[in-house]
Image 1 (cartoon, helix red, strand yellow):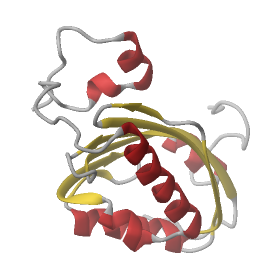
Image 2: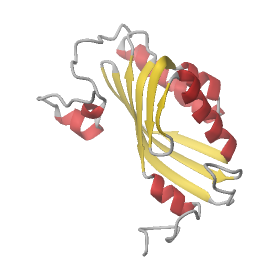
Image 3: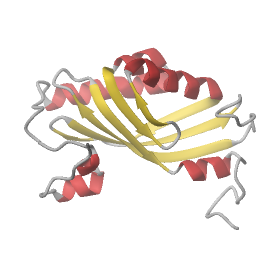
Length: 177
């Protein structure tokens, strides 16, 4: 059950960390140091750049949860892995850029930018050959051994669909209806 804590720090509000679904900050004390968490996520960033779906999937807990505008709520490492494979298959020319992460104990906020070209069928949409620029943030909650138990990806999926030509609107700027 998703519950907001009564006291929330300004950093949590700015990064969305107060929305990860935890009800008690002390129940999951990290066993990884700040430096180990940072290295772990730098390795994950390199896996994104290599389009390494298997490595990315292994970074999730077996019963982990992924929340994303594109796929909704996905439960379990196997199903989360399928989302990575689908993304890497449907879009070519993928380029990823990651901004500095915010690490707060067992929580990590990772701002990102992706540039993709839609080259194969995706979620029922025929390939458009169009490029989309997607800016967002991943908010992860880690188990004591560093596996992702919850990942919430926040980005403007509607804007991406407009850029791909799947929805009406200009390629740049707001939707015109």
